[in-house]
Length: 128
Image (tube, rainbow, N blue to C red; front, side, top):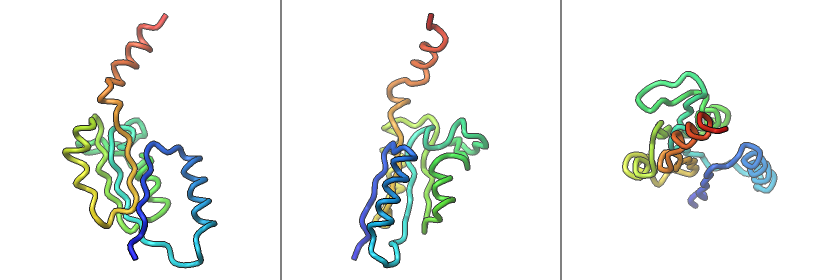
């Protein structure tokens, strides 16, 4: 029997915790299937601003995917998120991290496509 697939997109910590609590209490008393987690996305996923970023993708050990993986010890963890990624980058460079073993995926994307940083700069620096 193949484990079910889960997808978390922009889930807040309280909602994720509630979902985990419901799942934990509703599951039958048997061994949980192995979790194979892949984190996709942009700087929100890679952890820019969370401290300690490294590498070309500015990944931080304090990013939410890394913290979740550390707390839950999945069978595998692939940290494909990359600072400055656009939707095209995720499709072209990160989706290949998914495979038939993947059971959990998180993704944040779209801010760079919409010009989020320049919008925030305009709002903060030019507001009256």
